[in-house]
Image (tube, rainbow, N blue to C red; front, side, top):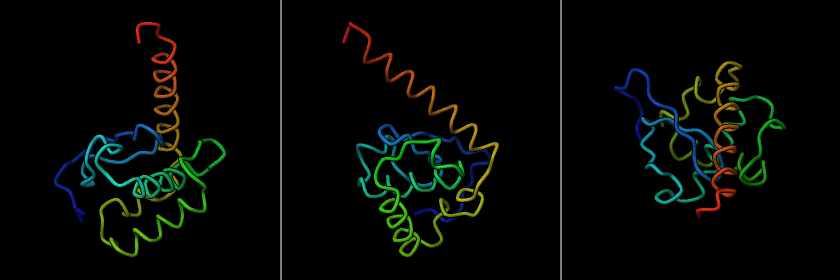
Amino acid sequence: MPKETNILNPKMEIEGMSWAVYWEDEGLPSPLSRHLTRAFVHVINYRTYLIVGDSSKIEGYGPKNFDKLMFKLAKFYFPDWIGFNKQRCSYDAELGNRILRIQKVAEWRFKKMLDDETY
């Protein structure tokens, strides 16, 4: 797991099933859902809770306590991972609002795809 980045403005990505966020420089394969063990999705899901600051605004992938447990476990095994940098794991009103907007668009696209009769 990378400890630092050479990318000045890493792109934020959204995981397909949990709608949790991660950054392109974190060494997580994209798309996450197909290549990474599902346990790590709980890590980034809990981290999304931490950034947004109000867990009632976002739906979780799994039980919040399990997400938190996986987060702590990953932090124990990968303490220097760039994804655990304080600015990526702390409440940030501006980033949290951006994440919520991205999640709304993702939800809208998903519903539109399900409603599309061509599938």
